[in-house]
Image (cartoon, rainbow, N blue to C red; front, side, top):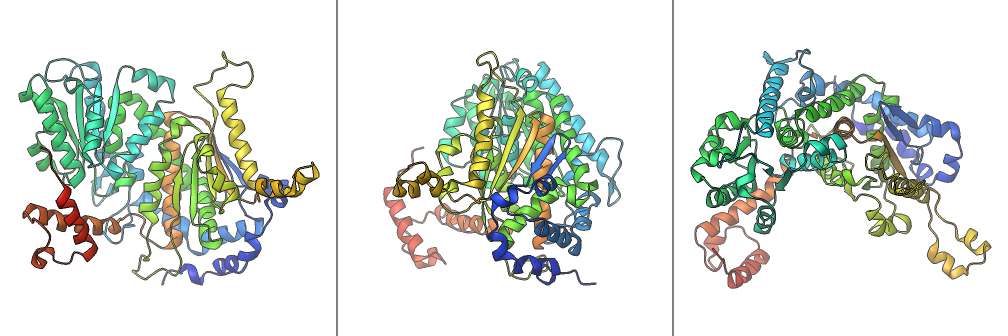
Length: 561
């Protein structure tokens, strides 16, 4: 039976027919309906999702649930747990959920015990991290390591960067990482290499090279540069292997790089880069920095949200509800930009992580059956932590174009400062700002109200804010490695569900290849020693504009060895 397409679904057609009416709903009116608000606020496991400030009526909410049933999205999502080939273009299963399986829950794929494979690597990570942290594994001079330099890019970098910073908000994790530091090197720009290495003592530094194939251009080039830096600066360069480990499936190339085989941590083809934070990609840095017990908490949090996603009906399922609301805002109402606004400094790297997760997954224009989409998939995500963003781009959110917002808040801060202020401490001030922004975007500020209080009419128009700006709120009881795991899993699953709704492959990234190919073509010209880009035979298919600017580059370029 041919799967139903979005365009043919009765619920989708009904939603589109109501578009103008839905877009012009008054949030002031909607929020006065307490029954509606109660139905749009959902809580699970210390996480509350508030959709009451979205331009959702109970009718449109029910139509979204019906659309889910029509398209059998819940059934499709089970493929994330059963090993279905959801990455159709590369013919691969998508099984990052298996990275969180408990040891006693066997799962087999193609005759292989996946659970056993996963826990073999987890055991390897645990032993290695404990040996490094205890001083059993030491640097070339016989002294312990206190710094870790993670070299990777994209999915081999952003998840680790986010989780490392988020863990620092949890006092036991912060205490366990005392006197240690982790730094990340991703950009090929030599300025990044200079900046990162200037903060580290090579004799105390272990480099972690992360590349699935061990051929990622930026990572390998940076890896060799860091290796050179270590060789030139450590006390015993012949023991360079002590300072290196790798996360890769290519044992041969990693070994040739100089990495001891027992320090090469694998992962699998069924783990996509942006979904790899629960593999060795994310767990090796976390366990070295914070200890393996923190990693276990994190994995339990991911698993908890996995089970909620798998077992809870759609109408109470947080990842499903977030996905449906985002789909509604973008595909039905036409709002294609989203501001992601965590009111927690410890989550300040989350927008950067979510950008890649969502836009690389769903930034597609072709369906799973290779047909051009008749609608746009994915939204453009940007963001900043509160309250910094309020003094940056919130002006546009309030008085410019309509941009749906995703707020994240934490109820109990581990950084509370009750001793400094008796009632309104830093965290309470942060929460006041969070809810002030939520209601300000929803209700706005009427010029009529301002003029009734004596304000000049012209000034009132300058100060007015129309409101009616949709937003959602995720509120966590506290921030711990466990809740960071819940957050990661929640966003992974909502991203996948949106992909299912749009009938796209959320698990490949074919679009990133073109720029790489063109860069490779240019690199080959430089390697051939092309002097002035004047010979058409050398230039191949380069555009005129590119040749003009490359000539200018060559005229002025003065490489310093």
